[in-house]
Length: 241
Ligand SMILES: *Cc1c(COP(=O)(O)O)cnc(C)c1O
Image 1 (cartoon, rainbow, N blue to C red):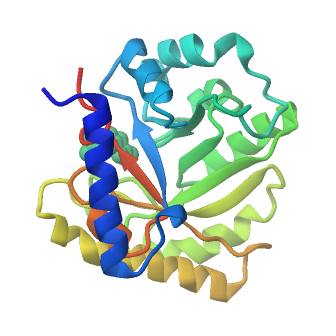
Image 2 (tube, protein in one colour):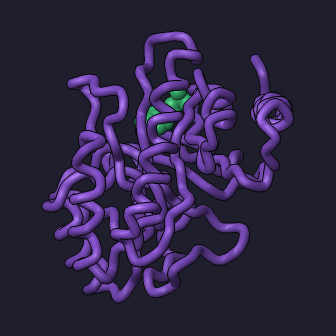
């Protein structure tokens, strides 16, 4: 059994190597500890190790952890968590009927992939008087099973987001095929980076976006080499309960 601190150390070492290979700085990359496989105690242990970004993909599984760790201390009118407290990232597909639970509790949404969801987020965020940083999810690999916009839908979709003042687009997110070698993710990650650059060149958003949320346990080094700014790490970092 490896301990949490050993896993963090191991990820940091691999990350440093990937940064060295690709001429990047470690400070350009944020780690999201995906806690969906573990319970409250392990999530608390992750925070105690100094990791602050927590990723969950279903509200039903996250609720107990969110309530225990952030719950009563939360003030939705703050647009950031007080220092040392968890910053929650919603990384899974978000059903419109869960928006009222999730918005205000999760600072970042990584799965904005349709207009009806943007409308629901906008309504709730306006009510709370907050701005919600969102990643637009793109299905770069083209697999049927994956959520996300088709690449050619990205710019028209981004254009429509300008009408939602409480949504702040911060970048793009993708899921690579899960079953292959890490190298199989490379063209997917590279494709996402090229889409981000195209989006910025098109200037349809009011601000340029830097964010690339890509890379999981099996392929995070490749993601770093291709420009990831947010890695979503479950198994390799947090472990399984
Ligand atoms: C579960 C999950 C992850 C983390 O998966 P690991 O392979 O365990 O690192 C990352 N992103 C999303 C969207 C997930 O659902």
